[in-house]
Image (tube, rainbow, N blue to C red; front, side, top):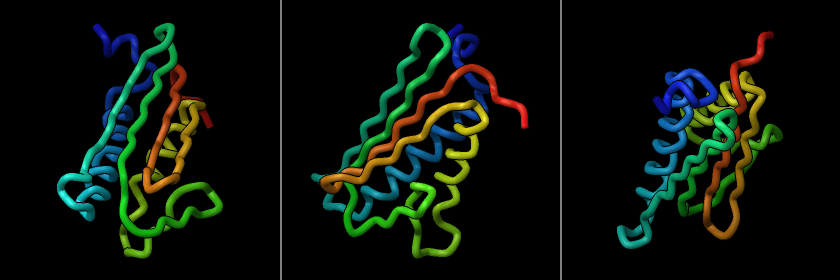
Length: 117
């Protein structure tokens, strides 16, 4: 089974991908229909490292906080990426966010089991 080879609990992986995809779909809704697209990729390396990426265009201006996460002006927004960052950190992984040329990109690397503490 593929799920037995993935680094991380299925619920954590679903939460990460769900948040990233939901954010991307929300972002492209502000664009003209012909400009809307979301690119999702996942790759398992050596049965122990999982790479995930989500990329989408966006309209408007994005501000990143000191933590590297986008700062939302709307109350109740911005919690999803903080949750993703927390989960990625528990697995000793990395979360990279880029906002260049009107494209928002997230890249996640996960390694093995969550760390204690």
